[in-house]
Image 1 (tube, rainbow, N blue to C red):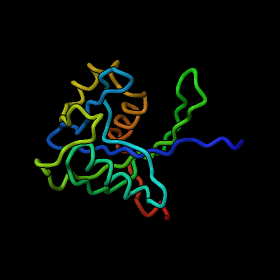
Image 2 (cartoon, rainbow, N blue to C red):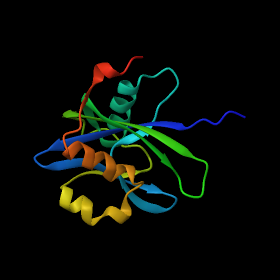
Image 3 (cartoon, helix red, strand yellow):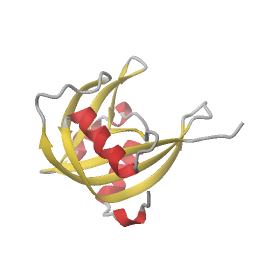
Image 4 (cartoon, rainbow, N blue to C red):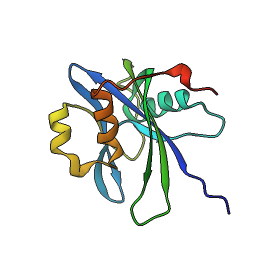
Length: 146
């Protein structure tokens, strides 16, 4: 059997020193995450992050840079995730759109608020991506080929 990691995308969106996050229920527990999800068959990484952000937050996302590529293995499991994290702008909000069923709400939080809730993060990748973004890590989208 060939081992296959799970490919995911995430979006870091900052407005007025607040970051767009989602509160979602995972295994019966409330967790915090960037708008994120799995790459679907035939989909580009950029289109996946636009779609996932829209589905989870009702915001239209315009990716501008790749923040980084991350590998994380779920403790006690063979499940490995490869996360492509993007940053860009929230362009337009559709207040009439229902969010994905697992999403409790999309919320804007400061870095201090996020740091205080570190134990609620879906994975360590959430803060890793955010810290890389805050350190200025940006790569052009032309790095990616579809």
